[in-house]
Structures are given as structure tokens and as C-alpha cells.
Image 1: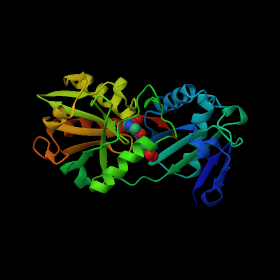
Image 2: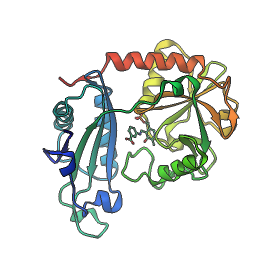
Image 3: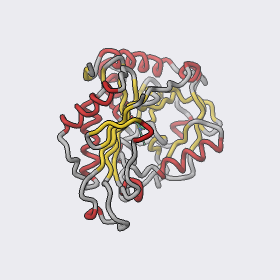
Length: 290
Ligand code: PXG
């Protein structure tokens, strides 16, 4: 039986329900995190919890628990479900109110924690890479809803995902209004050119990905040249390697963008080396669950 945490209690999946008056449902008013545990440890636990609280702060949502209490609730949810390798979804919504937009009518945020088993991408994808397209939908401007907020408003990303689905590929790349490369619908993007690993700065309009930061840290530790710089589609098409990073995907090579083959058309040596090092990290670090 799968147990779901809602506001301090555990419910079987079929009985895990929240109010239709919750503003998370009515308006997408809330924030979330997608976290992963490997072999009995929550990877980058503090970083995910910190990001959740920063997202909440950005939308003026006060989480009615301390970071340590929420972390403990997450660990307890994993224990209840007897999991060692899993995805964890932490959701904090504005809570139940009336039909007006104003959060003032929502006295108490709703906290939901789901720990689920993971379905991994096939190994074949990590070797041969994947095809992506560029979406015609531009990434939300940081001047409207900052993509750094991991909010319950994922329509921008979903519209791009629909274009990917229609094109028969798993992911879509989003540009900002100036044509600069931002990120994909649920992953950050990197390219490798002449031995230099590059990723766009967050300010162009991207989530400050935790896997992205892990890759930057690995580059610095291994002495692999790294630059955070503005990237256009020209740079992506002409890259030697391209890969995406995210909690779900880890590091996955991109070998075709808008029909252009990237580099050798296979997962490149730098991507493979970074993935190997990332997997070593996920096996050796993280907050103990049991
Ligand atoms: N950009 C966006 C828009 C994301 O949603 C990333 C980049 C990668 O960030 P991390 O911190 O994971 O390296 C994300 C992450 C889910 C789910 O269940 C979504 C994400 C991560 C985990 C689960 O939809 N998005």
C-alpha cells in the first residue's frame, strides 16, 4: 500500500484527497520540489528543501513547518513506504479558500508529500542520446513569473511539452524572448564545444537546477573547463556535445536538435565522463533515511 502524507497524517493513495477549494488547484497557487533518493539516501536533501522555501518566499507563502520538521516528514513518508530508491514530490499549496484570487482567504497552506517508485529511462537512451525540438512557445520572462520559482504553474512548460509530443520527441527546448536558450521543460541544458562545458546563466530564464549545480561542481573538481554564458541555437546546433540535466533524467545526451545531428550523433566523451561522476556522487552522498 502506498501512503501519502497530507498535513501531518498518512492516507492510503485512494483516500489521499485535498479540497477542490485549494488555491493550488484553482489557481496553480503553490510550489513544489521533485527529489530523488538513491540507495537509502536523499540526494541533495538540504538543497531541495532550501529551494522549496525560497520558491515559497517568492510567492509570499509561509510554510507552516520548519525546514527540519518538513525534512523529517519527508523522511518518514519514505520510511512508511519502505522505499530506498524513489522519487519524492513535495507540494505546498496556498490551501483552501474561497473562489477569489486573494490568498488572504486561505488560512492554512496544504502540505502533500508523495514518495513513489522510479521508472528509469532505458539505458539505450543514455548511450544513443535523444532528439529534441525547439518549442515555438517562449520561456516565461523572469519579469512575469520567474522560472526560478518552482511553482504549480507549469503551463509554459506543458505547452512546450505538447509540441515535443506532436513532433514525436521526448523533450522541447525553450528560448527566451530574445532568442537565447533557456532550458527544456523539466531539465537544464548544457553544451560542450572544444572541450569547454557551457550552460546558460539562470537570469535568461531557467530553474536553478540542483543537477545543473552538481555538474558545475564536478567540472570544477575534475578540472574540466566550464563557462556560464549566453547560448543561441547556432551554438547548440554547432556543439560537439549537448546534454540535459535534471533530477529525473540525471544527465542525458541530446544527439539531435530540430533535425540537426549534434557532434558524433552519440553520447560524447565529456557527457559520459560527467554522468559517470554524477552517478558516483549519487551513490556516495545524501541524507540517510533509515
Ligand atoms: N528546469 C525545470 C523547468 C524543471 O522543472 C529542472 C530544470 C531540473 O532541476 P533539478 O533541480 O531537478 O536538477 C526541472 C526539474 C516532476 C519533476 O515530477 C520535475 C523536475 C524534477 C523532478 C521531478 O515533474 N523538474
